[in-house]
Length: 152
Image (cartoon, rainbow, N blue to C red; front, side):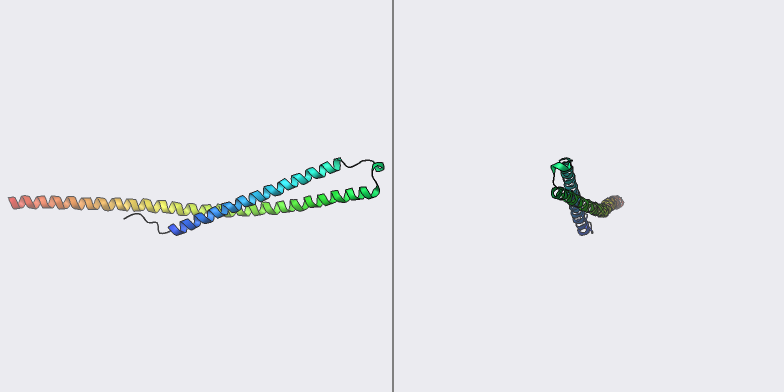
C-alpha cells in the first residue's frame, strides 16, 4: 500500500494559484517599468525642448512663444498623469506581491503537511512491519517449542 496524500488536489490547486499570482506580479512589475520608462522619455523630451527654447524675444513671435509654452505645459501634464499612473501601478504591484506571498505561504503549509503525513505513514508502516516480523518470530519459536515437547 503506497502513501496517498488526501489533499493532493488542493495542493495542486494551490500550486496553480501561486503560479498564476507570480504571473500577475510579473505583469505588474512590467507595467511599472514601462510607465517609468515612458516618464523618463517624456522628461528627456521636456528638457531637450526647453534647452532648444529661444531665450530672446526677437527670435520668436508671440504666437510661437505661446505655442511653445502650451506644448511644454502639455508635456508636463502628460508627465503628471504618468506619475499618477505610476503610483497606482506600484500600489497594484504591492497588492499583487502580498497576494503572491500569501499564496506561497498557503502552498508551503500544504507541502509541509504532506511531508509530515508521509513521515508519519512511513513510521506507521515500519512499526507494522516490525510487529509482523515479531509475530512470525513468535510463531516459529512456539512451533519449535511444541516440536520439542512432542519429541520428548
